[in-house]
Length: 109
Image (spheres, rainbow, N blue to C red):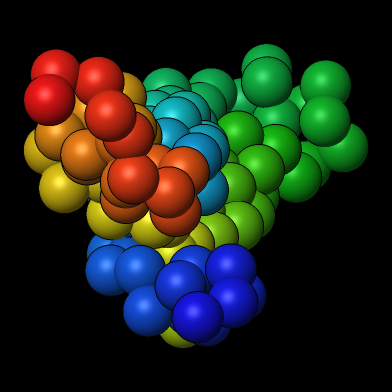
């Protein structure tokens, strides 16, 4: 059996919670939520006057929430698939010498 056929049959799983896109979406989503709250409840007339009458915190927060939702949607639609290690720390651990090299070993006989 060729090496390509062996790797094609290797068990795989999705990264899900460990996908970096989820971490990025969470951080940007938290910052966006804080800005939306500041825009709704923490804006005064002085801040609006400085920004030309535009509630910058609210708009930036909404933009960050949309960006965060887009990252989560991207991670859900195209998950990262990683090879399954089968609970082993070392890829060669647990395999016999014959399995790793394709030849029989005379060690221990």
